[in-house]
Image (cartoon, rainbow, N blue to C red):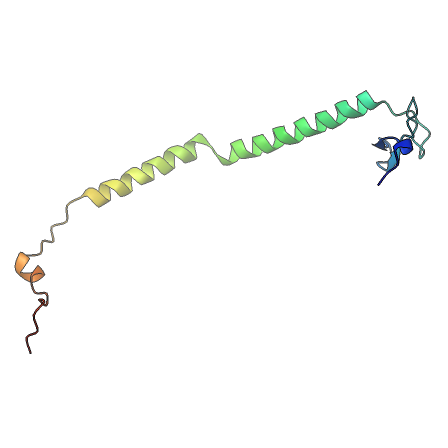
Length: 106
């Protein structure tokens, strides 16, 4: 467990390494000696997240074209029509009644 006097764990924007800010103001990276501007880091992180979500949404939109959906609906309609078409094969009731009854014929 980190101690309270270590402060908050931060990430150096230049190196990407983690460090504790030791509750100091301004926050200075121990790796580069640069002052770490938290607002700039937050904006960059938020921008990266938004860009990733936009990229993911674009990929999903490309995968689900409207034309694909229309073609799928048309294929389903064709299958439904085929199932509803009346076949000319008819079976007489006599052929259906040729099933063993409940009584033993032995």
